[in-house]
Image (cartoon, rainbow, N blue to C red; front, side, top):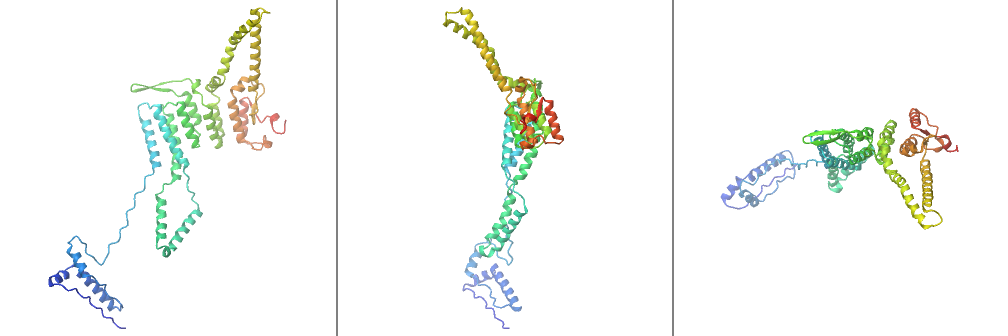
Length: 441
């Protein structure tokens, strides 16, 4: 094998001082290093090797610039990767943490919180719940994992065609996914933290449960499908003492649980009942009915709201009838005006009384809205009208627990069904009356 002689590189012309300066420069050491390595390769049989030519003038200019210029070495320092940005703080988690911190300060404080502050906290919690329920958790399935793996492999196989861009995108995709907040974890944290927080907040003696606070609480708990504490909170709404701040001390005043303002609104009771039915919790559903539709405050509130105006009208009817009869008696001369006044007065009262009685009977005996639960014969009409919401709630529970097919109704069996049937019977109602069932008319 022929040996190839390595030609030495020609030096540029210049003065002796310049050559001395150049010989002392670090570039000369670099050149000697390349020459030694070339000789070593030549001794082992390397072929076609020649050291790269260098521009001496450019090298001298670099050397004369001063010591701030770095000298080149044979070993390069490893390239440092750019530092990764710290993971972004999840704003949703920060919002939840701020709400928890505000709740702790309100509970631990010795001062009496205002209703506006409590409602502000509940509104913030409601916004957090909306955010948590709107997030969609990514399903973790083997098919999805295989698709991701296949995508990564196909990206790596396209390195030569895409010039490494595919590999870079394949490596950057998992990093983005790691930095992305886990929505399912945030949703689980909200559903496990918020219900207990709200229950503890309303059980605190310093927090007075106003109608607006009760509404916010019911809406949030129904959104989270947490109905276990509704009976307790409904009962506490009517019996919890009212706090009042007198200086630095807090005094409590008991309230009348039969008062009109302590009645549970029908809309809130139905919302809580729907959640209990959805959870298939029969005892919870019956407890919600007991603490809402069966309370004396609810009966008084219904009489005031729905029967107050008709009662006032009936009370004013005699006076209005007498005035109308006296006015009518002035248009005739055949009878004594006083006699005609009393005759007209009696006729007006009889007409109004008969019409009102027929209307009241029609309202109290209407059964088109009844599905499976009806009143037992002999129940007074006033009780039927007053307890209609209770009967409708039990009817909803019976429809949810029984068969959906109308022709199979009455075939249900089981411990829960028998207890429900007994409970309805104790309330003066009948479940699946034979005369009203399909095909039994």
